[in-house]
Length: 254
Image (tube, rainbow, N blue to C red; front, top):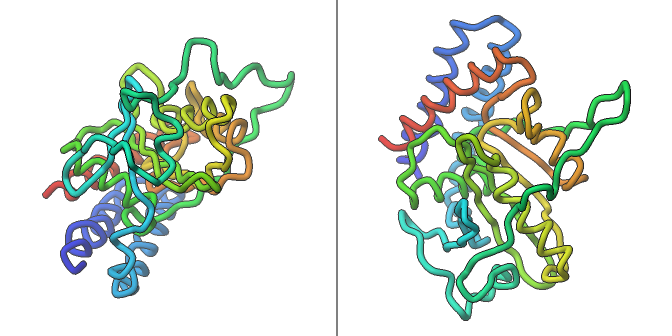
């Protein structure tokens, strides 16, 4: 666990400190909050050490709908006898339902009104089960790239598991890759429970399509949502968040 503190928490605090020196005070305050959360988390890592081998199994869905189980620095096929509940959303080739053209759109907003936005909570990277799930998935993929990762925690009488999705350049965002399988399979009667929490490395986007902050509010109302790096509502916020995210990934893969 001390290694995780050195590789994730301390570098995160240092990165955000450097960025805060270069940006307007209002934005710097947001990064100072993340740094404070990371420091606070570091003081509790004795307890986290007991929980770091998180009890909920983690799976990764790719852009074609293929689902693999996330292990320590590897992805493996989902076993036929897997009892987590993940098999309820898979076909014989371990593929799940994805977003088709025209499905699960945000739709038009009411005249003179903005779409409701999800209220996402800032958390320091690596300090929650879902944020660690994205780190585990990145490690299994060996992915140091800028594309965003999101994790959805499903819980029901038929099982409990976490599904991680990755955004695609000029394609769907990570929240949709990870979220649509639950919507589609719930509609088909394959699931009995609900998504209870969702996490995105960057905050759900607000400024540009597909406006994930509004999309989550529409399709996953009441779900606890969290993130680690700001991403909107202004373009300047996106730039700052992207820089912090890039620095975080650089240190994560040291």
